[in-house]
Image 1 (spheres, rainbow, N blue to C red):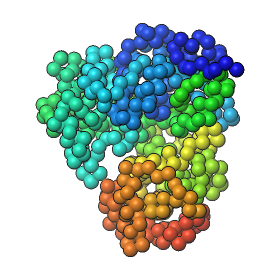
Image 2: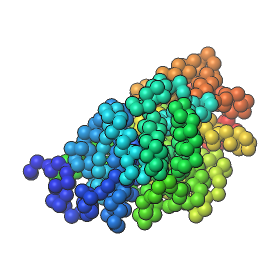
Image 3: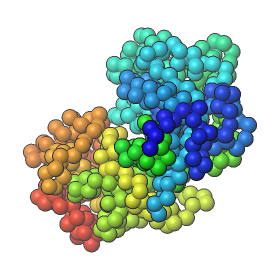
Image 4: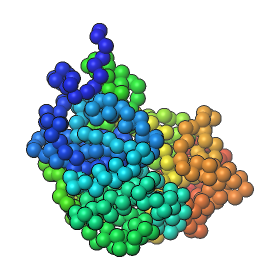
Length: 500
């Protein structure tokens, strides 16, 4: 066999016909969108939708320029540049079918840590209409205790003193918006694509909070004139493996050094409020609504919380992937009962959504054996995820007198996970969290004070002070530390034998 063809613009016409590839002239595509945080999810979601739009209509003003702000983004920058910013999206169905699609909507990539002025200029350019973000929950620099912009962050302090050499995304956005304002240009829209409830509102709050540290007048202009649409995003996108790279080599004799894998399901619900125009994404499946709140709450409290429930319990049990968990009748039943008894009762009405069907579809999606989303990835940065996905459900059920034992057991198991950093068999877990050391210290103190983990306020706030939750959590802690076989306790919870 001949050596595999490296993916590039010049070999697109030589690809097998079953690979979908750009049919539009990428040399004529302008950068209308600057996206900060190009990872797997952005490439399976916003870039995918935009590629479909470029394929279907004359939308050449909506190309994407990716931006990395950290040295850790250099690998993505290097590989994308080598491939003319092309990559392959592998859409894996549960029946084993794989659709391969080369995505061409990203047309440039810049490193903010190398040349911050160039990135600021790109954002400030008249062609840029939208700056979108996938910076993860931890990237929003929220003070967990106050909910305000965290001014104690050394990078934030640096950015206040050095507005032309920023490190945080908020420094870049502020500098670019300042340039546009002084030039008399309309502001760009800032579009968060992160799994955070009211992600647009949060982005506005954090950006205005930072801008006030530099220029009160500019902060007021941002608050009045810049649009921050809230959005709900959804597509399961596991980490790319060497097997995925090898699939393209063996199946198509194609070398793509960083393809993206995802499920067929894809959803994007966006509030239709933009500062300076937007793509016709509605033509390719995006849903524009006046209020996204019910949709995002549904997704965060069901899909994202469901991931964390299975991720933490499954990791301690010894499972490796999400589909393994769903393939276990007990885990699948526990998840469905968490959905029905604790998550669903605190959801708002969601127009056009059958919640029973949505929950059944979620479990089916989780069980897709060809996605094999690893629990280590799902548990990544749980200290940022649980305060958004799970803990609000606990608080609302406490307020309404609802069930809390399913979620309380997940929190207690997370304490064990953070303490031992191993499954019930003693096998080490790949724990990655910004608060890993602090969570470990709090969890290891459980033997002296069973509420020590729950008293870690950056994650739990004042939850330990709630008498009902503290009592239920303590009972769960006693059980999981006595016998870390989580299945025994899951059965007891489902039988309403503990924590009721």
